[in-house]
Image (cartoon, rainbow, N blue to C red; front, side, top):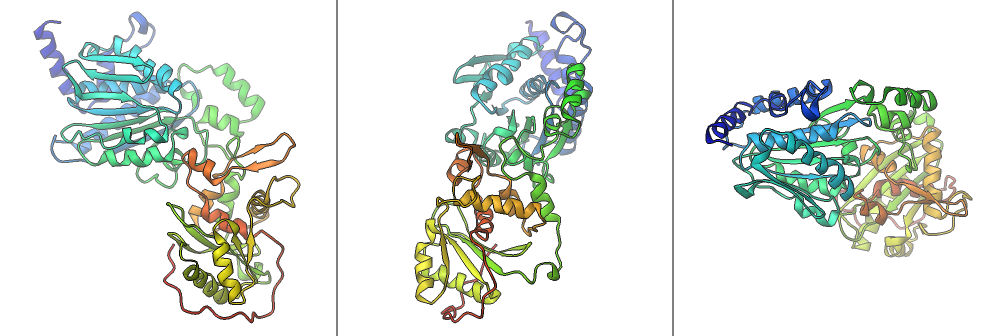
Length: 486
């Protein structure tokens, strides 16, 4: 390329600083060669790029003072062209923002290499600035960088395994644009999302999450719910995209129904009522959060307290009250490594609410139970691995969770959003003998889902049948416990 052409091209890229759509229309030879028959992006892609450009102009990054991160989550059906859009996003940032740094990930290394990064290679060849960059797509070696600035002007493809989370730490592009792109974001572990947050503190940060809404738990789901105030959200119906197979989509609609989870996820870009392996449907938790009960609807029932202790790590200890269809989170605590102190907390709560039964998880609760026993407390230990009296479930934990599921379906109420989120988080599998195994806390953590400590505390209130007791003769809690937190 001549120096005059390169100077003109660099000048043009500067003019597209606020205009992603303008760049895409300029950078590719629409209507010719491989793009014969295509006059530009699809309508939903144009809207995406236009909205982004408006936000860039509003932030008006001056190269010095950091601006607010631009976060955009796109939930969609299949076949809408999100891989092509991802490639355009990368090439736009790389071409218009010298010394930018980016990280791209996907749910699996194969998805990343063959789809996301492979699509980037295809569009890089078509791009008018493609010769500015070196591109590689080897296994474990996915990157694109400026030919003269390999270390300081680049984007890397990284797998999203939790042990690789440090690759998503701060990108340090204070005078340019650090950016993250998550493809098939439903399956990206929460740990990766948490680490990426730290890369949004300087420069002009961008964060894009794309995916089919296959799971209704996790951080991608929360972009549209808990964290919706931080994310620009787009939900794209496959029927509105140019290139989707409309006849096949109509077959799906006839076979499964417009409101089926299959059609919601694969076509409408909506999150399912329940993921394929989800034990308790989202609709149960949503209904539980929406219910407001009068005391007359539950006041006659025994008061039951569930205690889920925690001794280490980031898990919290939780105490829950349930009375009939009513439930309430009474407290959450960092950890309970002092058995006497936490026994005081439990005893004070038992006395305050005149509880008829207290059930404590056997796992970390034996010391707490022993202290309570010395005070004359009739607390009961519950082994999650114990035998189930429910023939459908493998163990006691499964029995309690199945009872909680039925309780929600019959009108149970929840007072805490985190509890509601935890209730729908565990998945399940069916053994050869037909018994259902609920996902363990450790398995949940391995797929990046926080431990459901609050939900386990509520589930403990279903451990055994309870009737109202006469006033207790137990020794009162020796001292008033430390302030309870939530």
